[in-house]
Amino acid sequence: MSDNNTENTTGAGVPPPEQDTAPGKRETFKPLSRRSFMKASALGALLIGGTSTAMLPLRKFKSDTSLEDFFQQHYDLLTPERMERILTRIAKEVKNRYGVDADVQDPKPIPDVQFAYALNISRCVGCRRCVHACVDENNQSRDPEIQYIRVLEMPEGTLDVEKSNHYYEPDKVPVKGKYYLPVQCQQCENPACVKACPVGATWKDKDGIVVIDYDWCIGCRYCEAACPYWARRFNFSEPKIPKEQINPEMAYLGNRIRKKGVMEKCTFCLGRTRKGLMPKCAEACPAGARQFGNLLDPDSVIRHILREKRVYVLKEDVGTRPKFYYWFDK
Image (spheres, rainbow, N blue to C red):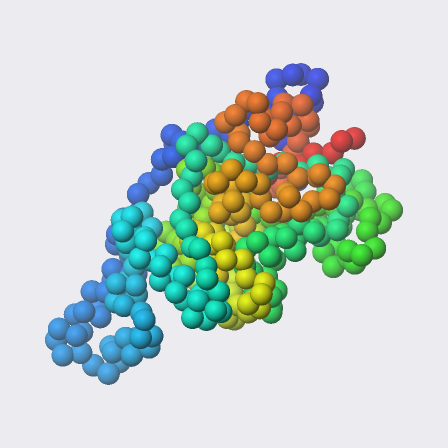
């Protein structure tokens, strides 16, 4: 970790991160993919008579799964009508499995917004309320429990995360001589995870949030290996969530219930933030350590912090350009 900003005495501050492309622009995914290949292969096998082996994947279809669902197009290519059918299908699956009436939406990025996070380490007390609020909001598996946020107990006087303790007892904090460093997805401007994905299942969206299409993810875990912040989680088993703990307000690229064999991560609670609300972890923090806002708004709390505080980012040397900033009051 290293300093990423200047002292506040300069008054110059730090401008919003530069963008490699114009805001809201990214390369459109080409429709040559595993799904296109699978579709051509399966239909070709059927047309020439097929074999028992070729038919095996189709025999595993559930009665409510259509070929259209199985060969779903990439997110970039979905029409509004097709997306509406997908959202209806997901809500039906939640109802059938959990008995919960889910409101599944696909909120789009807000124009002229680039989200960023800042965390005052001097205020964090290590209570982990942010961790549990995140689990509840994002329908993360409870058994085994998946957590997007890690809170590291650090010795005072060092920024070396190798000396941290992730397994401290949160009911005994704060501990004298220690401080606490929450780590989650850094929503990088230059995300290594996106470059590592071989099928285009993860990308940086127009508002800077790095998202995953769980229906397109093949579970190869290349993104997990590429992330220098250990911010991605893999569902090794079918997620288990008690019915009474399910959050029925779901987002397609966010907190909808995932399936076994896919990656997942923090999305800045996009189902909330794209509606003008705060991330759940920021709301849950009892110490006011977490700040969230729009980098493109010169009057936002984030821009104020970047101007007035000496902030730093994690692993600046790897070139990912995180949009998650840290600072100390002293």
